[in-house]
Length: 247
Image (cartoon, rainbow, N blue to C red):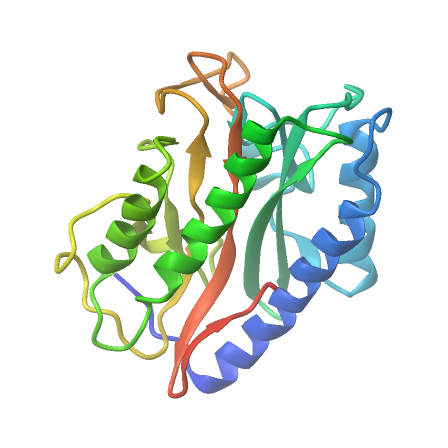
């Protein structure tokens, strides 16, 4: 069931969203060759806790860290570790925070030093595909319109769109109904209503879209080893239109 957020609940979600956005801006400053993903995770956790919030991901179904940090061919759900970032890699950082009982969730992919043109294009297309989808987040619209807009934009560049991992509703729970695929048919799906809150998150690959899960049960990577990018924000439909809470 999709839960409708009241104006007061949306205000609480704004607070969580600001914290998530702040954490991503802060951690971006430290993304460089020679830094470990565990160090980046510590920065994220410090920002969240300093704001009086709790990391949404820590211990969520057993996840061991405050953020998901995914390098190159890892699409999502990478574990922070002592692994050191290398020049030319890309790293996706997914952050969630809960404050006053409501969650915010967002992700960005960053360049580690100088990267190839193809990797930069992947990052740029993934980000823009989110904004193409958000154009269709409005009261009376259809969820399939959002998914179709993302897919149509990505398809122009020949990149892969991960099928098994999708966006989701969000609010009192990190993951709520509905699922928000990054592919779909226009004019189908749920009718969007004021008070709906969604985490829209294109996960795009430079090569084939098929994925596998590592033996840790979490780490999701491309089967063909191609790099992947991830861009996510929490959005809500208000009386004034769509509002992005995690920028």
